[in-house]
Image (tube, rainbow, N blue to C red; front, side):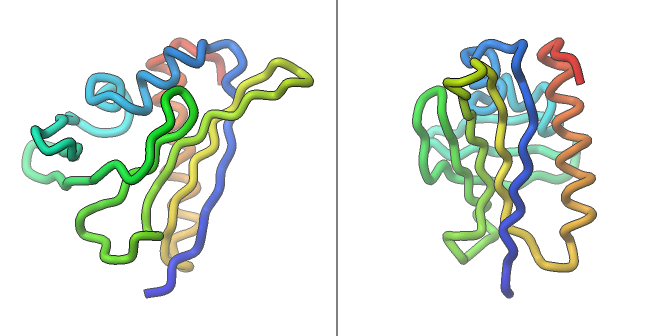
Length: 131
């Protein structure tokens, strides 16, 4: 199935890179906003539990400390079908933003934008960051 690249960017000026990175790359941080529970397995895979009865595994395809992390769901065969968090810094303004990159079916664009906007609102709340 053909996937579209969805790119969304959110400003996070009043949050330290270290704090933001922890919420994007650790089981404890991700459990605060992304999933009901997140565990790191012995083989390095993440297990995302959505509720008490369902969950799924993802592998980390790429990670650059404090900059980016890319996950791929085990259910996806296409290695380009992943989701990624990228922290950007503006040298000019000193600002910081979070880019979310997700690969989705064309008919899911509006739903996934809404989904990510809600998740990022939860992330901001967890970090104590203003909207």
